[in-house]
Length: 239
Image (cartoon, helix red, strand yellow):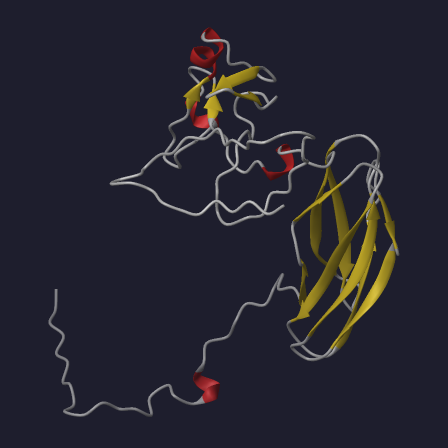
């Protein structure tokens, strides 16, 4: 072995490796020249009703024109089906597209392909189109709170892996699509399979509902977790 002696100065050398040329080289392989985006990842619309979607691109380099096109998707029709976005240096631009929804309820996905000025493919932009009758709740489900016994990891009602047992709920008559009565009000249990999205985790979102003629009461069937010492919030009804 050997000994190494280092003599340190009394002041810092602030000029060491401070010149622009001293910066280490960057590996730009695979780096996109622009990135696409949308103003909303999920759009809810009624069957057969067009939905308005905004797509755009943010430039990461010199001025260029990015081309986009709607990829053919079962049940969806987009107009216009293609276009161009003129991007200034480090700038962005967007386009408004009308996506006509099918008459069958369900979740649909419209993909928009983008290419830069050199013809290179850019990351695609995908918009979820939820086609639902007015007042439907399922498009707003954002949490999976029911799992089959032995498959608890498929859901996480509390954000920590805990959820309700599908078997235990079924044992007391709570099954997908069943009617649940509480405090004199009847609710339709989410008609979903265990492990799927089946409830709305409140976060300030607006959920439109369809009114019922002659109704005089409104109820919320809910549950809470991690409420120590307690949870509070405002539930606003606009009519």
